[in-house]
Image (cartoon, rainbow, N blue to C red; front, side, top):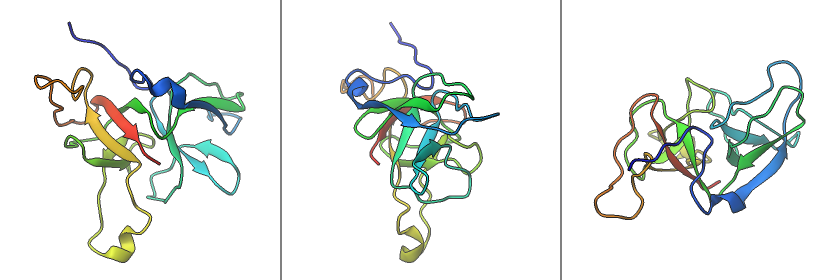
Length: 157
């Protein structure tokens, strides 16, 4: 029987990597479940990474519903596997980064042709498969994502 997962869900064992973090408050500051977020080190506030390709040292995935007025939100951090929405084709085990189109979604890491341009552009994690894929059994290998697919990401930063 097939399982079902939505963005923001996590795999068994990942609950030990959930934690509350600071977020912005005010109109439009709620961040939907399943979005990749990043730490703004100068303010200590977590938020959507933006579509400009900025470099972040810490990332996570929003796992619980939050409201504009909430000063905190719960995210899944490095070490866990969480469900996110993808913006195109990603191969199994490929490194991912936040989308440059849909803020907080995932895309395959697009490395630049020069070493200098890649410094700090490590992916935020790796694609591990759709629900019921890539679970270690030989008859459930991970398959490529397509636009708007929901899949598992192992967060590493």
